[in-house]
Image (cartoon, rainbow, N blue to C red):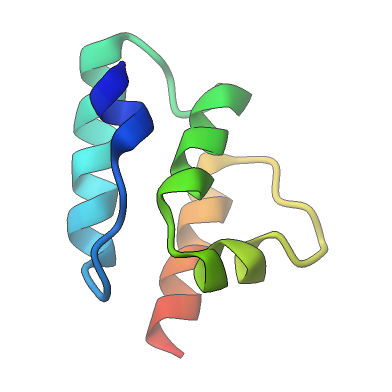
Length: 75
């Protein structure tokens, strides 16, 4: 749990961050649909990417959050 909360993305390695995040979520017994888990995902992103992801419309699924984060990293 502590590793999941402390996980931070290293610029520009979003794919590595996503893979590590999913692995830690499985190990802790959380699900990717859990709101708290999605909060952990956002907290681990660089501030500029997290802010871009939070621009409306509000995303309600992990898959949508991840996709928007990846898109913002690529642009």
